Image 1 (cartoon, rainbow, N blue to C red):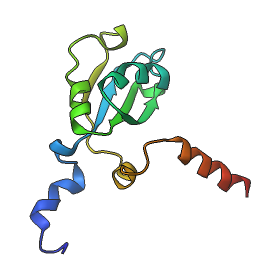
Image 2 (cartoon, rainbow, N blue to C red):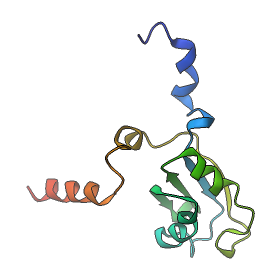
Image 3 (cartoon, helix red, strand yellow):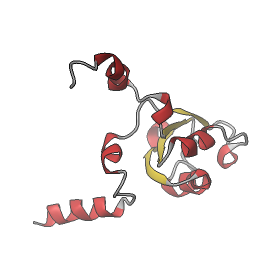
Length: 122
């Protein structure tokens, strides 16, 4: 009942509850290390990465883990990330929605790409 539970959901519309956040916002990344490969090599030590979005031209990226605990470990990493002192991490405002829906049965990005390719070829 959407109307009855307004209070619980108001915050959710704008920002994911802290206890459910799984996506890190990584910024001030020098472009030579702002690649899927380099970011994966650092962040995979904290757990299962569901998604990485790289914005090289803006020196930032988003890294989403499969659990809040994993993301928290990545956020609390005490040492220099990828030997680049400028790199900072923070919580992203929200998780990627399509992964909330498919989290149970979809841990790979490859099925995603195949689907897009087959659509184009028809």
